[in-house]
Length: 494
Image (cartoon, rainbow, N blue to C red; front, side):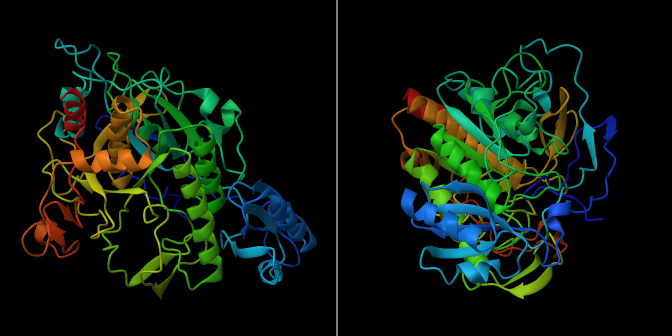
C-alpha cells in the first residue's frame, strides 16, 4: 500500500504530547469500473487551446470526437479538462490545429485514495491564562517570532479580505475557525470542476488544510490558539484528494475559483502531482505547466496574490540536477532535470515562494531553497535541530486540527501560511493594493537574514548540507528575509 501523503505537507505530523488519535490506514480501493477498459486505464488530461468561447467549444468537440469526455471547460483561460481510456487520446489531439497542447495529468488510473495515518494532539488547558492570551499561546513560538502579538495591537485584519486555503478542506465547525470560514466562498475541486456543497469541502482523511487555516486566521477568542490575521475570512478550496494528491485539474479549478470569487490571497502548501518537477521537454508535463500557469496568471489578473511552499526536499531550486520521486502516483524513477523543469506552483511568475525556518531563525534542515527562487522565509518548524523553550518543547508549529483539537506539524506547508497571513494583514491595511503591490509590500517588510558562513550542515551529519548564495537582502535560503507581522502593522501605523 502506498503511504498517503499531502504534497508539501508536514514533515512530521506530530502534535503536542499527551493524546494519540489514530486513523486506521486503508488500502487503496480498485479503480472504478469506468476506469478499467480493454484499451487502458481511465486518465485525466489537460487540453489547452486559445482562450475564447469559440475555440474552447471547438476543443470540446474534438475531445469528444477523439473518444474523450469533457469534465470541465475553462474558456477564460482556454483549458479543457477531459477523461479518456484511450492510450492514443493525446496523440490524436496533438494533430489538431485547434489544440495548442495536451497532456495526461496523472500516470495512474482514476481511483479513490487512502487515509492519513496518525496524529498527536496538544492538551488544551482548562482555563485561559490570566493575561488574557489564548490558552495555547505559550507554545506558539512561531507567532512571537514574527511579532504577531505586537501586530494585533494595531490590526487583526479586515473582514473584506478573503484568504483561500487551497488544501484538504477546513473543519468549518472548529471552535477556533467557525467564525472565519465563509461557506459561500468554499468549494471542492476534486472533480476538476467546483462543487459547493458543504460536505464536499470538509476534510475527510487529512488535517492538513485545517492546520494551515489556523495559522492564517484562528480566532482571537480565548480558545486554543490564535492566527496571524483573525479578522479576515477564510475560504476552503479542497484540492487534495483522499490519497493525498493534488492533480493539475484540481489546482486549475482552485485558482480559477479564487479569481472569480475575488480572493485577495491564496495559500498553496503543496506541489502539483504526480511530477515533483514538470519539464518542458516532456509533452505531457509541458501541457500541464502551461495549463496551471494560465490558471495562476488568470487569478493574478483578477487581483489574487498566490503564496506557495518551496518544498521539503532540501533541494536547491536554482541548481536542479535530478528528481528521484516522480511520478509519485505509480512507480517513481530517477531522472535528470534542468531549469526548464518547474515546481508548480512555487516557481511560476508572481507566486510568493516561501522557505521554512525554525525557532533559532535558521533554515529548517528539510527546506528547499534557491537564489531567485525563494521570495521570503517564515516559521515552518524544525524539531531536530531547533527546539524552543516552551512548555511543550516542540520545534514544530502548533495550530488547529479537525474536531476542536490542536496539533503540531513541520514543513514549508507551515511556513507558507505564515507568509499568507502577513499578506492578509497587508491587504487589510492597504485595500488599494493589487497582487504585485502586495508582493512588493511583503518583500519590503521582511527582516533581512544573511547566509550562514560556509556550508550549512545542521546537526553536523552531512545529511542536510546546503549552500546559500546571495546577499543579506536577497539570498537562496531566506529570499528577502523573514516575514514580520509586526513590521507589516507598523508600516501602516507610521
